[in-house]
Length: 203
Image (cartoon, rainbow, N blue to C red; front, side, top):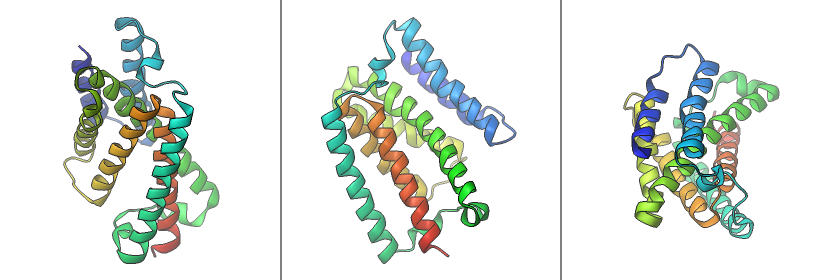
């Protein structure tokens, strides 16, 4: 039943018709947060903390979060200096010209990140961890990659591979901390660092 819900939620979120970004955000919130939360609470009869919605192990979470952010910062610095990979990411011109728009842009990005962290690093990871243990890190990454391909109509690009690597890092954070809080912070801070680097270094 859990895996049926996972697949159904992914397909619904990827293909449900929406007219704009706001409708897409609402749609994905329903399919990737509300449905798994209701299923966990009323069908599995478990608390949402069982899928990572808690503070978890704060010491482990903080240490691993700091380590992965440092690694991410180093990777972005090296990529900026030695490659042109950042030029493959598109940032709207309005974000470049207005700090207020930049804040709104990062806020909306944060909402999407939370949705994905809740579903993939929370629901999918903890459902599969009961069966395959730590290998659930890679299972949730595969589900995330499939969803990304579905949502982008099969387009494979540099962002796809970077987000896949980040999904592994986020999965490791959840496994170590037992909470999606740290994986969310990792992904959100990484995205802000990435967007900032694109704005400053990509013309």
